[in-house]
Length: 415
Image 1 (cartoon, rainbow, N blue to C red):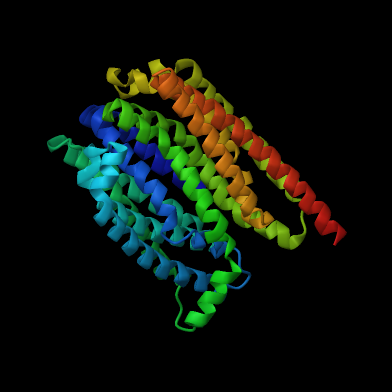
Image 2 (image 1 turned 90 degrees about the vertical axis):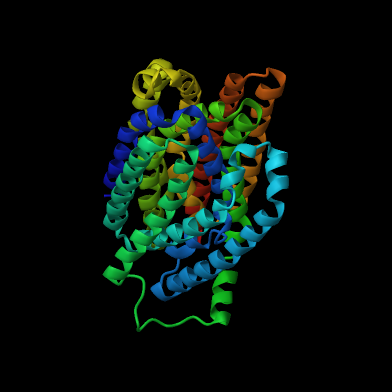
């Protein structure tokens, strides 16, 4: 069900992309990619990743308490981020050499706010296994936003159109999900116990490992994913960032389509397996192998025919994006088959270890980027090193999670 909804949304997006790339061009797409990269770094901080904990409590009452806690945090933290950006806007733009996005900078807190609400709604629906709601909304949101890009871009193909629609897209998605939730009455009920401030603080302390370990981990991961876009925009200009943005968008389709669907379903499944005393290692290995087999052919096709494929589908000016995509295929292949391992982390209680892993991963990928940019002065070598190192660290994480789950099984049997 989730895969079907994601497939529909991605099919719509990719069907519109060849038209969008011919309307807007690399520079406009590069500015969108730069804005999205900044948002993806700050968005995880909006609710301190507490929404991910919504699926863990046995009782719905505690889960609803986490929902309320996440709401309150998203309001407070978004206001703080808006104030910080307002004060440091000029300094931030100058340090990163991102003058081209200065006009869009105040949209960041708004997008961050709705990203938090979107995550809350999605995690509640995952908990209740109402996957069809997420699927339907994904398709409708994708259709509306991509139609808007074409219609508005036909008259005014400016970067600000793409940026504003990206910000509005998160808001629209969140609002549609919450309206569907309220209609089903799966989140709010008049008979629910209201959590007071003390009870919310108790829930916050119980799941303290999310803000303490998971938030920095997600932040660092997002920063490492966004670093190529920001560095390309800063050192080589918006057009280079546009080539990377399109290559990353195309390569991320399998991860967004299959990987997120598997992760969303696998998370409650492995949580259930823990309560039932099942073999966690077997579940993780089976899901990982399945993803590896299913995804090998499309990624291999891009490695062989990337430049020709991008030139044919998106227009001749995008051939550089196809060359980027050749190397990014390795990165995103391992990123995809890594999804069951990432979903297993909260259940195994190793979020501190994930944070350490993320720091090491980000440092090594950053070194690869810097080496390509400053030693070889080549964007292509930088992307190549970033992708190969990323593939290696994703593979090492899979091995680590399998070892941890095996030890967890032995410990549970012994106890």
